Length: 287
Image (cartoon, rainbow, N blue to C red; front, side, top):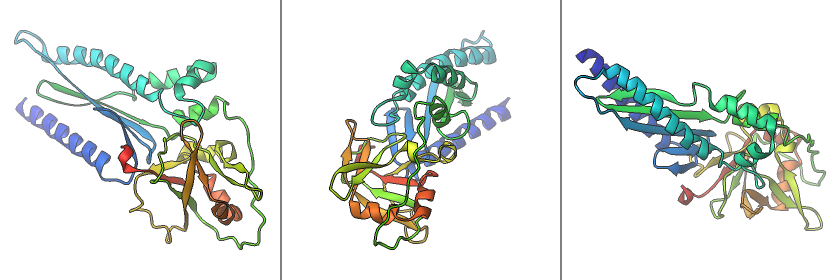
């Protein structure tokens, strides 16, 4: 029994070390939702760790009481996780809750996925302390982005045509937008705007321009709070500054016409962008 307790304690310590490094040692923008949960907007996932204690009398069965307490605890965690997940902005217009309120297909698929057994799992026990985690990726088949796209809310398929200009285009593997000087609200599908030749604001990139099959696997956009681990030159990324935000929630970004021409004149750059290679750098102060 002593060896078993030591093993459980070791597992518990290792899990805590992992979760600490997971949230601290990266360039990903981390949005803290509560004292025990966050959204990682770089890797596109929700992560939460939750603790409870078991008060056991000498006459009680420890294992039986632990299982009972765990079941009760999972119910309370699931309610918190649901509340936090449905508050996520899909774009400037709707949240996940809004889509649940208006789309019966999404309600059915989301409910089935959310109440599956892997959403909240037992992580460890040390003495009378139980730990549960919720690690929900937004990527992959039957996960959040896939369910949103399957709802057909974003049903349009718009092909981006490369711009014709005197500029000789250079092929890039992705678009990096510097926006730390602005107050950006992260969302799953931010729109990108620029200006036409008359100076009128135009939409140049949205979820409906993307390759949705690739977006399910890779995500549409990724938010970082610094660019330390991005090698712009080696990875052939196009780096530009945002001019301003757009939209009522400040989820969308405006870039200059010059940057619009330089990037969107290349069919290869466009082909790489629509596969999920959009990276937005936002202020660490928002964390």
